[in-house]
Image (cartoon, rainbow, N blue to C red; front, side, top):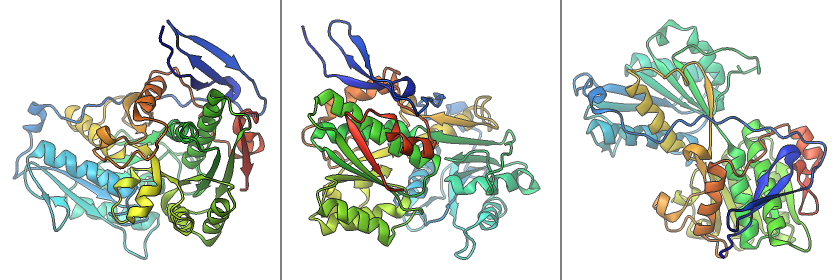
Length: 439
């Protein structure tokens, strides 16, 4: 009788359930802690089809191509994060389905039946009006049919565009945006707008679980800003660490040092915290979560003989601007599959006859492991031999765990109430994991 490894399920009130599979399997719940409500974001399975139907593609010609534009948020196109990943999805979709090639000098597709172009707000206009101006440029100068908007900073610009006649015939694909303006006031989309948000807590869980299963017992988390997406990453990380600690039956709880830098950028304070944790054996591995704040963790890692770290949003091992030592110290990345999601959504728009389907039109939908939109990168799936840095926890074990997240056997708490989470050890049993929340 073969006995598979034990896995952890996060259940009601953030209770952790251990799933032991043996001749059919049993579920054993343990612990119920007050203070943190269990909530689970409802996923929409957007599918995995990134190829439009041939008869739909036949509507486009080299003389009358489909035109897809992207506007960058607060960084450059080559930011090794949201902008770059979404743009790779746009260009890949165009080259694969339109028969053109990616021009090396412009990094756009100018041939075939699907063309691409990107726009960056002016250096002194990284605000709602600056982003809106770049979006208008995509329409007036390029004639964009669809504009891809990567990142929550576009929320205010989308509200303005909905009431701007320049966008009457343009469709907007937002990534990580919700229906709130710059002042956090709610508004509604029209049928030409859709947005996708992610279950960051799932890939955070996978990263925390993997780190502890690999042998790390002192963890760190350096977040950018305490916005819902980053909060869910961090909470999932803690939940995964607690689940793995329970499974391993550790004598002492794993610990997590937890800090928000207050901005999506490297800061002296974030670097100092990470350096102190590494140097004083307070954290053996640190999850760098939130835009360029990872640079603080990387700097501290370098100062401590390339200490281990975990990346976020994209497969950061693929970032060749990082040194070999820094890439070698990266153990994994908690990924949103931005490149693939962009292709799937664009294919759906084409197949629906140049519109969003009824599920997407005017809505914010949540995607996660069910449609393979959050994950950890693996050498085979991501064509990157070095992206898996763990030595004791294997890709095969991860794949088995991932299936349980995909099919709902493992449920991770989506709660993003930072005040409640930080005051209640993120809802996990301190017998298995303790969080030192710094703020």
